[in-house]
Structures are given as structure tokens and as C-alpha cells.
Image 1: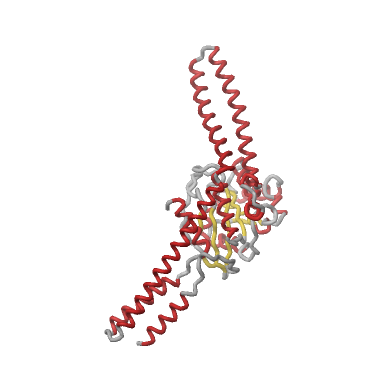
Image 2 (image 1 turned 30 degrees about the horizontal axis):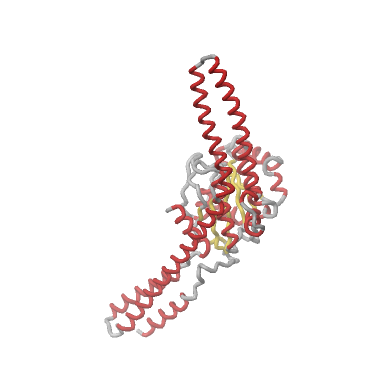
Length: 384
């Protein structure tokens, strides 16, 4: 019977040596990979396929990834892999400015805690008839977020091959690889172009291109953290601001045209046309207000959002420490009961020992380190 207590005390001593979540460090066996691309491109599906997870998947062009999401950590070829699911810049529920602030706050916080990415996956649907404005904008923002120095750690994945004929798909793939306006510049700087056939095998094979890489910071991480730039001063922020200003100028031209047509309708006493133009004018004004608001938020809201994420992380850290302390207390109580009940029946002592073993096992379960902590912070931030 004495062996029970000796074993439980040894297990408790070992468990108390578990590193605290408040002191994250770089684990060379970890591989953290971000997944980016347009809404509906299959980012979440690939992540779930590779990780065996169950992040919510959108249907069609409706987004279910309106925030940064983290997969469960899983093992692949001796590495502990975590995948980061990011919303596209054409999200159906949030503006591009909101998306950039969210991604930037996450990446900057990650880098401040000495965590860098082993790689980045960019997903493109080979089923797209052409690379339209939305796809080009997403890829442009991706380029500005990453910079050139990390492109050797980038894999561009084409998927949805089952939706096109083999010859059509291969022709589109060749065009994407050879055209300067598509993927040629990044491929020349070290990025890889691979196919995904929607199986777990190819999803994991894609990760094998990245998990052994030396982790590198993205451009936006060094801009925000090392160089101390504001979000609007970063390459990604400047690109988004340029797009927003172009939208404003285009809307202003459209507004002048509508006002001219409105004056013509009034002069001609065409009341039906005037009412139609009035509706169009109100719609355009609402869109102009939205774009101008996005431009202002790009400058003002990032710092507040990042500070709130940091606060939520600290709350998550304190909650994890409190939970661990309560588990230690329960273990000590069970050990004390075993000692006090030395003369109890075999079945009673075996029941107590079973409870103690289970408590120690729960305590020794991996707490997930930095990414579990930031995942809890994001969930708290969203009220999940």
C-alpha cells in the first residue's frame, strides 16, 4: 500500500515542473503555419482535413471565418503543428480594415511573444474562371503582409481540381505560374506552387513542405514590432489605404454623375426618374460613408484592438494559473485522504487512488502554451 503514496507524490512532483503559460518560449519541435486566401477558397476545409479538427466551414461565398481561428495542435513527422485560419479580405461580415486590424493584432502579439511562422499557405481556387478583382486584392494584401524575405517559406495551393477538366485546370495553373500579374514574381523568389486534391494525404503532404523551415517573421510583424510603425504606415496598411482612397474617388465621380442626372430629371419634370436617382444617391452615399469610416478606423482602432487582445490574454493566463492551482489543491487533498485512511478497506483505498491518478493525469495534460492562451483570449474577445 505504501507504493501508492510514493507513486502519487512522484507524479505530483513531476507535474509541478510544468512550465507556466506566462513565459512562452520558442519550441523547436513546434511548427506554426498560417493559411490565407479569399473567402470560400477552402482554407478552413484544408485545415480541418490536415488537423482532424472541426473549425466551422462556410458554404459558397458566405464566410464562417470572420476572425483568426487556431486548429488543435497535432503531430506530424515529429513536429507539433498548429494551423492559423485567417479571414479573407472579401469577408461577408467585416470590412477589409477590420480584417487587417484583426490579423495584424494577432501576428504582432505572436511576434512579441517570440513566436514566428514556419510557413504560410495561400489558397487559390483553380475552378475560378478568371482571377478577378477580389482574388487579386487578396493576393496583393497577402504579398504586403508577408514581404519578400519570407517567400521561401510560402506555399501557394491550388484546389477544387474536381470542379474543372484536367486540361482546363492545367492550362490555368500554367498561366498562373508564368504571368507577372499572378504568381510568377513570388515563385521566382522561392515560393512553391502545389495542388490539393481535397484529401487528408495531400493536405498533410503540403504541410511537409513547411514544417522543417526555419521560422521567419513576416514583414508586417517586423514593421509593427521592430520598427514601431503604426498600422497605416505598414506596407499592408498603405496598400489598403490606397484602395480605400481609390474607392472614395470613384464614388465621388459616380456621385457627381448622379447629381447631374438628378438635375436633368428635375428640369424635365421626370418624377419617376428623379425618385429612382434619389434612391441610388442614398445607396451611394451610404457606401461612401462606409469606405470613409474604414479609412478612419485603419488609423485609430488598431491600437485599442491589440490592447484588448493583450488584456484578454492576461486574463486567460490568470485563469489557467488559477485552474492549475485548484488542481494541485485537489491532488494534495486526495493524497492527504490516502494517508489518513491507511487502515481503510482495499476497495476504499483503490477508489481514492483512482481519483488521485485521474487528478494527476488531468493536471499533467498539456496546456497548449502560447497558442492555447491566445486561442482562449480570442474566444473571450468574441464572447464564445
